[in-house]
Length: 131
Image (cartoon, rainbow, N blue to C red; front, side, top):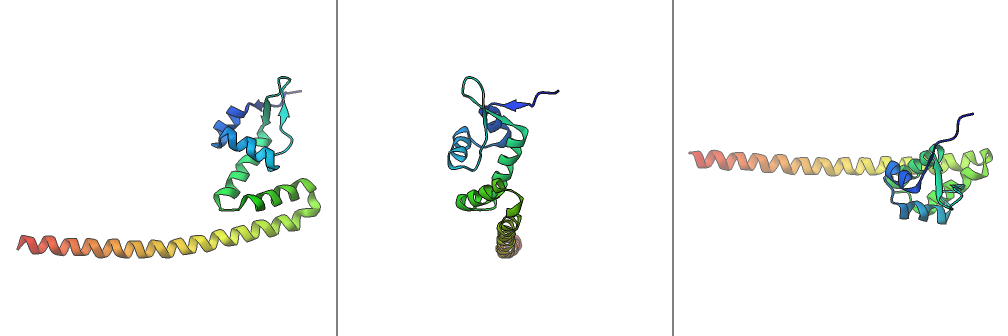
């Protein structure tokens, strides 16, 4: 039987881009649970743990508050009878991300309009100076 690959907290940090402090914090507040410990007490992360951390990172990057991340984590641990609640949380987050993208696209259009306007002004000034 093949042994499960395990990672130190430093290796998990390197793989996920989260600091060791953040990983410890996530564990402390219950976002991450069940991290094995070596005989010396050091944390040992599995590939599944790293995958879960990557998903937490995704949620956080979308602007999901820690409290909602905790709610989602708790629901996940409770099992399949919480699927509806998890779908609802993720759907709400998705809809908020879509709204933010739409808003940013509007801001992008305004910025592009200003850039085009200023480039046109610059061209007109350069042409006037050449005359």
